[in-house]
Length: 88
Image 1 (cartoon, helix red, strand yellow):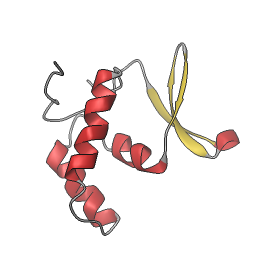
Image 2: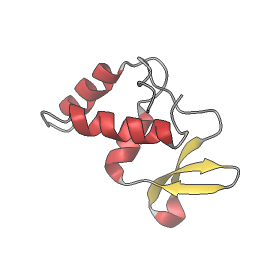
Image 3: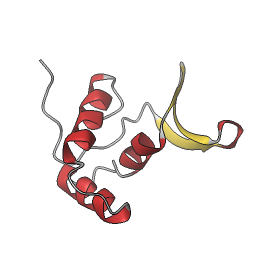
Image 4: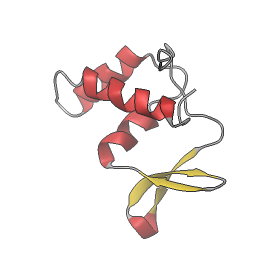
């Protein structure tokens, strides 16, 4: 069973979000390697600072990209990130 998402998700201290020029994409770096992110995942994870709520992240993304109804996709990515240890 997956634990519920934290109210204010943040990246785990074991990971660092960084733009890699050589790969022309955002990545999550950790001691054992790197996770390449698609642009949507990067935009979501950039907002996981422990200050914003999940709803605030969704609202900010909907406003920034003129999109509606993306809450389920955002939550799915955050849940997957939590399963993989990216999200505290």
